[in-house]
Structures are given as structure tokens and as C-alpha cells.
View 1: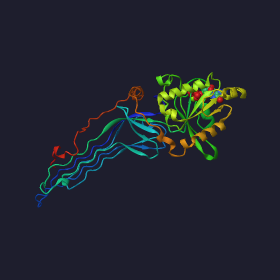
View 2: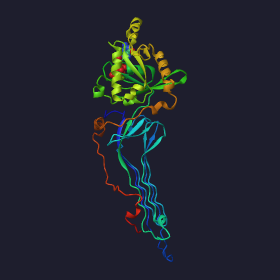
View 3: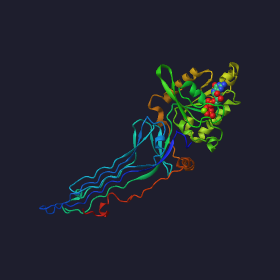
View 4: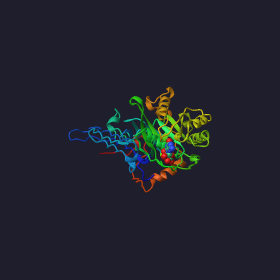
Length: 389
Ligand SMILES: Nc1nc2c(ncn2[C@@H]2O[C@H](COP(=O)(O)OP(=O)(O)OP(=O)(O)O)[C@@H](O)[C@H]2O)c(=O)[nH]1
Ligand SMILES: [Mg+2]
């Protein structure tokens, strides 16, 4: 996958800016004896922010982006001068990106909409200058508040493609052929397993200018949940689809059994996948006649089904009608907020994570600059070094 342009996994070392120190300056001007405290506040540190951008489809632009450092806030100065706030770092990501803590695998946040912003690491607050601490009995406080420290975290960004329909099937089931037949996508099609090595998206036009997005992912085989074939690595791309279209070729010995194997692999990956709407397409029906279709019909699983052929075009209109109908069911509204809330992001299993990270870490060094991340108690300002400037 290292050579591919389809990057759906990156790891970035993020650090917010620390807050600037408040100044403890005492005014000492000619002719103004005992000028009093005039230390200004420190500036706020910049934050690390994730922002959705619909113009990105993958995380490719972040492939070599190893660090995201926000600016520190400047220290406060004399004469009540405020320190400048540090600049934020904005990491633009495609809609459908999920962030995890790389050390614990904990789910952090989820970007699903264009321009949506989530603060990943908040910049430290600037400290207050000594001017704030003057009281009747302490007219020349010789201390100020320190700035809040920076925060740092190794973050994993993972893309989960936002499509309406996900294609699920064994290799060679005809998934890519279907996508190329009903959308403008041009996935590679060939008569050997695992032709498709990375997800393809296609926009399927429906009647009256309506459309929905279909995702073709690499084939799944029995034991994928234990890492066989391409494993379950790509299943996350159908995790968010409102509807799963199971594809089983008409010449399969036992269609029902193959469907159950697929279903079982999905359940191993994430049991919530079973809550999704399902439709079954029996593919390659140009190879069989009507009589055989009727016979097959007797032993099909109990979900809506349709007989199709991506090659001859048989049943494709009926398939689109059925998909549209299912997508628009009350429980599954395609036009309302895309149903993205329906999926609960589970924290990552660190063992799986380690394997996946091996691939993306290949040949990279993370430069950990030495910064002084101070452990300070923001409210215990008197313990901080006293600054006389
Ligand atoms: N006769 C017939 N052959 C088909 C049909 N659909 C696909 N095929 C053939 O089946 C083979 C596999 O098709 P693909 O579309 O590449 O299958 P896939 O499910 O994308 O396979 P992977 O990418 O390996 O998972 C190709 O040789 C296709 O020409 C169909 O409707 N009728
Ligand atoms: Mg394919």
C-alpha cells in the first residue's frame, strides 16, 4: 500500500502552543516613584485543530506531514502590554476522518462535515500579569501567573469513506463490474481474486437528477477477521454506509451459506454492522436462465434481493430502484444528515493498530524536539519563578 495514492491512515505528532507568561513588571519611571505593577498578560498558545474539507478524498496530502506544532503565546510585557496569541495549526482532512490517540487507541473525534472544526489539542491559556494581583495590602506584587503548558499527543487519523451503499462480496463476485456499469468510476476488473486492492467510489445517478454514492471495497474471504486475504483493513470504509449490498454470483453452490459467511466476517469486525439495512444481489445472472433463477429464489436469505448482471445490464434498473427505496426508508434517511451519527466508533485494538502502523511508519523518523513542557499548576502562581523585568 505504500506506493498507493489512496492513503487512509496517517500518524501525526501534534502539539499545541503553551500560554505566554504574565509579566511581573513594576513601573519605574523618572518622577513616578513607586509606579506600581504594570505587567501585561501572556498570550494564549495556539491550538491544533482538525477541519473538514470536502475537496479532499484521501489523507494523501498528510502522508509526509509528520508534525503539527502550534505557536506558543508570547509573554506579557511592561506597561500592561499583552503578549501575542500563538497561531493555531489547522489540519485539513476529508469528511469521514476519525482521530484516535496513537498510544492508547482511544477514539478522540470525528469529522463528518465540510468546514466542521474540532479542537484536538487546546493551546495553553496565557498567564495574568502582576497588575491583576494588586490589592490594598499588596500594592506591588512581584509575581505573575505562568502560562498554561502545551499539550502533546501522537494522533492517528483514519479515513472512513462516507458512501451510501457499500459493496460486500467475495473476490471475483463482480463488485467492480457493477460499479463501472452504473457509475462513471473505472475500477480495474479482472478474472482473478483481489483485483481491487483499494476502495473505489462511484456516484450512481438515479432518476430526476438524484444520486447516491457507492463504495467498492476489496473482496472479503472466510477468515478475513483473522487476517486472511486482505483482512478486514478495508471494512472500515463500509462501516458508515447506510446500506450494505451483498453480492453473490449466481453460479455459487450455496448462495445462502456464502451470504452468511460474509455476514459473520462483518460481525467479527464490528457487531453494529449487522444493524445496517441489507440487500442481496445475485450477480452474473447472464450466465443462468429464468428457470434457474426461480429455483434459486426458493433458498435465499430473508432480505430484499435482485438478480443482476453487470455485463448484460440485466436487473440494474431494478437494483437501483431497490437501493433507492431502501436508502429512503424512514429508518435510513439518505437525505437527512447522512446517518453518520449511527456508527459508534470503537477504540482501536492496539495489536491491530501496531501492524497497521508498521506500514505507515516505514522509513520515517519523528523528530521530537526538546521543549520544556512544564508541569505547573496554573493557579499556584506564587510558586513560579518571580520575574523582575
Ligand atoms: N458473465 C459475467 N461475468 C461477470 C459479471 N460481472 C463480473 N464478471 C466477471 O467476473 C470477474 C470478476 O469481476 P470483478 O468485477 O473484477 O470482481 P470483484 O468482485 O471486483 O473482484 P475483486 O476486486 O477481486 O474483489 C471478471 O472477469 C468479470 O468480467 C457478470 O455480470 N457476468
Ligand atoms: Mg474488484
